[in-house]
Length: 157
Image 1 (cartoon, rainbow, N blue to C red):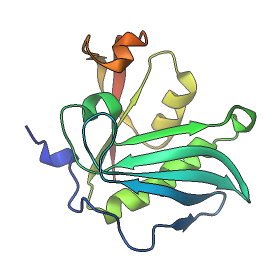
Image 2: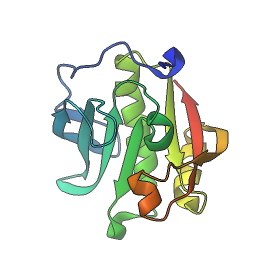
Image 3: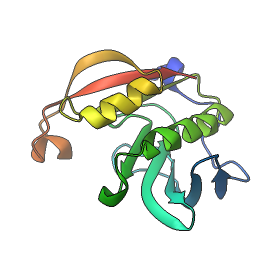
């Protein structure tokens, strides 16, 4: 069942998304894929750039389906040597602008209960915890990797 509050209007790549400039970081498009590994949603994958150095990645999935409550619309990762500088927060703020351009009104993000760093990033981006116990199905790869539940956050755009 589609939840329109969490869906976007445009499910294809926008023009001029190859490089998104920000005041602290830039996002360089690695690729736009017609479907993700989990639920078949199209998604952007960007390298998070500090100057000429790639310091991590951020993705934006387009659309909504049941698995969105597990994977969220946005996923990010900062390489170990670059953590602790709020780069994930700055990248998330930049990707929110792209989400708005796609017609999103709200984004969903998930974190593990033990990932305090990610929780702080989501909260700083005005995330609101809407479900502290999203259960992972037993046949899901996250379950196989030992994850049993996730926090689900909503960010209004």
